Length: 227
Length: 81
Image (cartoon, rainbow over all chains, first blue to last red):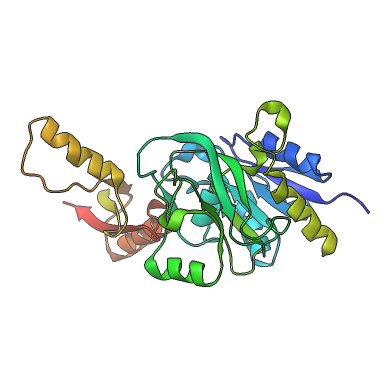
């Protein structure tokens, strides 16, 4: 069988695309670079939207990226079931693009937070978390100034009732996120967004706090092989 | 040419830590009597032609699409006299 192909999108101002590509490679999949200005998903099996400061975070984080040519391809593809994950700025883009509900706003502390964060996997029924155990606690780096998840009371209640909260902060909330939400999924479970960075926690050699992030990448591989 | 103003504010129920920080700073600077501060964005659009109903409808579409994230923000559109 040929290797699963995971697209990694680069916008102007994206920072974490190389780490994401490396993480994809480490689990035995092929990372396919996708360029923001292209109308081309290159037939990939899944897409990773990495973190950074796409388009300088002008206006709002993710507000300009949402209209990039690649997103015109990605939004309908995600709607049709293509597995997509966004971390940090990628999560912000998914919310701005209305692929996920709610929005990410300025940290309650107003401080940029960069630390190792304990989180709990609340939902394994997604394309990106099926390799974890339900309730498993892992450690991932967080690094953001605008990661406070907010949504209307109705949306929040629907997320909780439907089991759409995928990752939750434990041992301290870094940004004031409602219900300690670190990551969510869409109704179908193929689209996941989270503020922590699995792609920065895949190799002991670089001093990562853990290699827990690998689970997100083995999940997508398992998902694609089983499909 | 006409100038159309779009004011974008976080919805009342959304926490505004920047506004709160400003409110806390004011007394330190000797200003009193301010109970609360909310911070927002103001866009000034120079539109070609008159600011008629059609132009304002177009600006409202711009606000919905790009200027505001209506999940968390409200906006108002007015013509500057």
